[in-house]
Image (cartoon, rainbow, N blue to C red; front, side, top):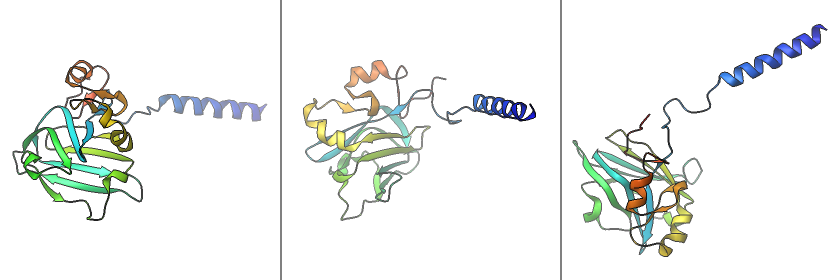
Length: 178
């Protein structure tokens, strides 16, 4: 009988501890953060979906968490710059909107072979976002020039982003409504 009581108590303890644990990260936003990416003419393009004011840095990480992880870092002096649409790779430095590459990708690195790209914005309160780069490369040509892949939310144009931001996802610089 004592053995059954111990097992029952142990099972009850496991259930209580499991139920008490919240699997969501303490500072995770209430909706998934997203940023839009597309490739046109070999140029990787970013659309934050809504303007990010006061950006002092931007970090692109390719294949994050793998042995092939590589990053490019952009910076701007304080008080920062406004970023909404930006040619990230393969574009002209004139398109950088005041951001300058501080840490370039290695010369031999082929970003088109990466599986994913993560973006992190420094300056304003912002969330990071991740995109399937293989999907961006594969599908961009089949979508209108104003359409960008917003992660799990799919291909979106301005009206779609405006409608879904704060409803099914958050753009990287949209404050969490909760």
